[in-house]
Image 1: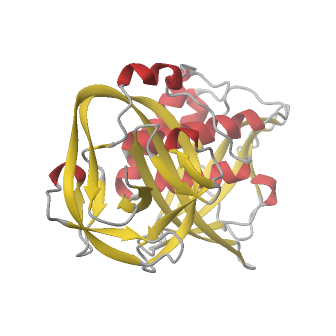
Image 2: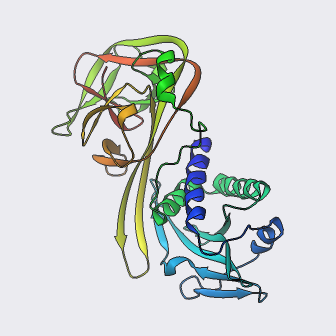
Image 3: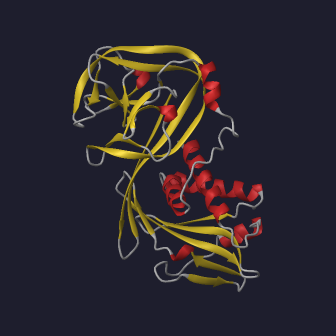
Length: 330
C-alpha cells in the first residue's frame, strides 16, 4: 500500500506542477526548508500572505478548503496555497495545509516540476513521514490534487513499457495473487491462498445486488511464474458543497489480478486489462453495508514477480468479493 499511495501522489504531483505554467522556476532546497516555517494565521480568512517581503502564499485558485472523510469516519481538512517568489512573481511550489480531526496541522510543499531531484526526494520523504502518523494521508492528498488538475493517467511505473505485449510470456491463467482478501459468508475476510474446499464465501446477484453464501468446491493453484498483473485503484467520493467548503466522503479499494480476469462493469463484462479510468464497478461499502458503484481512479500493469496465483471454483453463483470488489468467477 505504501508503494501504491506514493505512486498515486507522484502522478498527481507531476500533473499539478506541470499545470503551473505561469512563469515557474525551480524551487531550491534552501527555499524548501525555509518554507516549512511559513504559516497561515487564519485558514478561513487569509488568502494572500507575504513572508520576508520575498515570498507569498496565495490561496490556490481562490478555492475553499476540502473536508475529506475516509472509511474511518474521521474528517480531515486540506487547504492549498501557491508559493510565489515575489521577484518576477514566479510560482515555485504548492503549499498544502492538512488539519486532522483533533486540530493538529501538517504542512507539505509540492515543488515545481523543474526542481532538483534532491528537492523532490525530500518532499516524498516528508510526505511519507506524515503518512506514518496520519493513515491514508497520501491517498487523500492525491485525490484532492488529482481533482484540481483533472487527473489523467500517466504511466511512470514501467517507463513506457507495454505490459500487454509481454503478458503472453506470463501465461493465460485467470486468477489472483494469494494475498488478495476474500469475503466469507461469516463476514470475515481470508487471504485467497488460505481458502479450502467447503469454506463458504459470498456471491452477489449482479441484477438485484443481493448476496448469498456458496460453498467452495476447489481452490485452483497455478504454478509460480512472473505473471502480469493489472492493478485497479477504485474510489467512491460523495461530494457535497457547503458554505465552509467541499465535504468529501472518500472510500477506496485496490484490486490486483491477471489482465484477463473478468469483471462486471457498468459498461458490461470486461477483462481487467480492458478496463479504463472512469469506468464503474460494484463494491461493498463497509460503512453502509451496501453494494455501491466505485469509479476506477487509476489503472497500472506490471510484472508481479515469481509467485503462484489462485482462483476459486464455487458450487453456485457467478461472482465473488475480492478486496471488497465484485469479480466474476472463472
